[in-house]
Length: 108
Image (cartoon, rainbow, N blue to C red; front, side, top):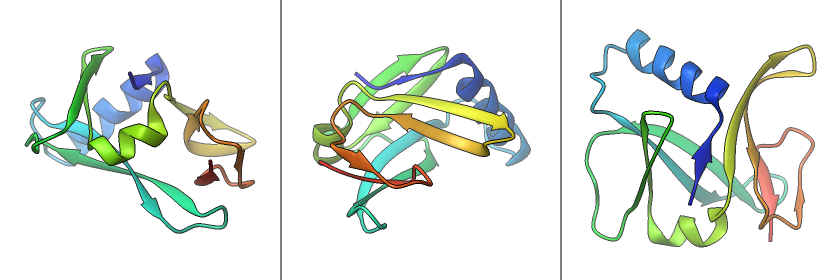
């Protein structure tokens, strides 16, 4: 499962509203090649499930993830921080063997 913290869910809902998207849009969480550690996280709004998608609901938000990305993201929690140490989304990924300082890429 992929989960989302209350603060991250609140921020996603705010961004979705600011973008003029309806509540049926969920958050697509995926992994792409690149970044300083080899793999990068990617977040997008999406309202269409693709074949093979893993779909979760947490804190009233639909989370979509393709099967290949899910192999890297199983057990991950998406969090959001707006503190002095950095503003943005952060991934608590138990599968990552290391991550970069910015938290946007990782290796397994």
